[in-house]
Image (tube, rainbow, N blue to C red):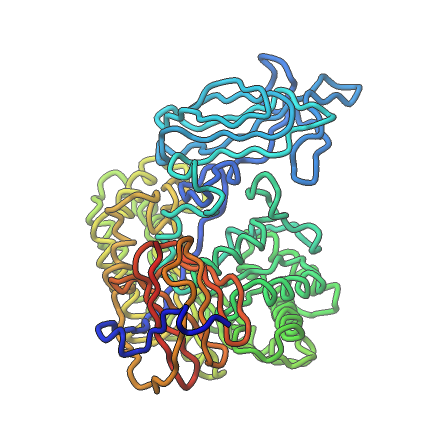
Length: 606
């Protein structure tokens, strides 16, 4: 241990003006899926968000997709290009990235890096042919659409094995920053991140641990979802709880291995919300039919949807049990029973099955039920039924959406009664406006345009505020995970809290800032303040420092001089020591707290 003369020791009294608080309105966010057409630009290396390879004949004028399978390295790169299987024409590959974003990504000088021997070509918003290996700057004009990268040649003896396409802002810093600053800034106001779409939960084909996406795969847009290691890294950097969804076909070993990984790598201060799949009750997803068939195979009685509910209860219990085998009876685990938002009778049925030893032989306990009390779901189709699509105004549509709020409130109240009956917390796994057409109405262009205009209307801010205030103040619900982060509107819905990352006038997101994020109420002032905390080195040149303390498994919160939470990564945690890396400059103020005592410190990041 360093001597005290080599440390800066900051006691509570050394920071007399800083007042720390905690939110009384816990909010989470459902992240958009990591795909090439997403306006949520997650990684500093844009190629991590590229579409998987499209294989085509290696000649000009060939059809876009040949459908031929080619051998790949473990990282997903071809073993050789052109590839010939001896019966079909030689094949090459292309990948699309930053596709169909309507210009909502940065133009400028991107850094193209390719290792291995071969040749790549860019076209679309960037142009050029490059002999590999290569490390160069490439001009990208977002006004020209997306970018296509072709591998025209990859030498078998030294094949192309890595491609990076770094956003202009990060060409010199990408090695020290995995996620874009804009993405980190967006998630910082939430307490929990739900990774359902990152994990490609709906219709997942993943069964075994070996089928998960590796962290070193060339793209994170695979149908098996984003690598768990990136989920862990994001939560550690931002100090956010993780709400995770387990593939509906995942076996027990998958659950065990995931539990081990999370216990080893995830910051021990963070909670893990455990949910079996997503909306297994929903017939539009393959997990519903699977659960009904799996229940039948186990001898469960009832209609297919009843068997699906019973199987949901069984696999939820199995999931909780497997995690408890690794974590023990830990308050880090929040064991969630996934329920149907609008029907409290089904919730009662699910909880009845979960508490039945036939489906839960280990008698594990749940902590919460989760619902999706969307509002306005009937509005779109009603406009068609009433034949008013062409005549109705945006203001009139918004008024109809507002009139639908009481229905959602009634669902919340009914589900809260069920949660209270069973002594469980009530959570929202998804929520917000649900103003989207169904069936043949999705192809009504006039309707789509009217719905998009209504979702963009400033009046949505008032509705979202009323909606969230009812949840927190009247229902007194717990965590609310809004759906979803970023996404351009289409006939399939206007789901994003923002349409793109640098949007400033997004009414739904403005509502969160005004009515959820700003609700800081519970002052931390009654805890005994008796602990000295030391920090080394101080100042720190690279943002990494060691906190030495005498608390019992404390939580750590870091803030800048204005009281805003600072993004940080817990590098390591040992008894009496926590090593931290922050992505900030200037004064960083910190709080360590356990059940009985608190300590505060200050560190200068140069």
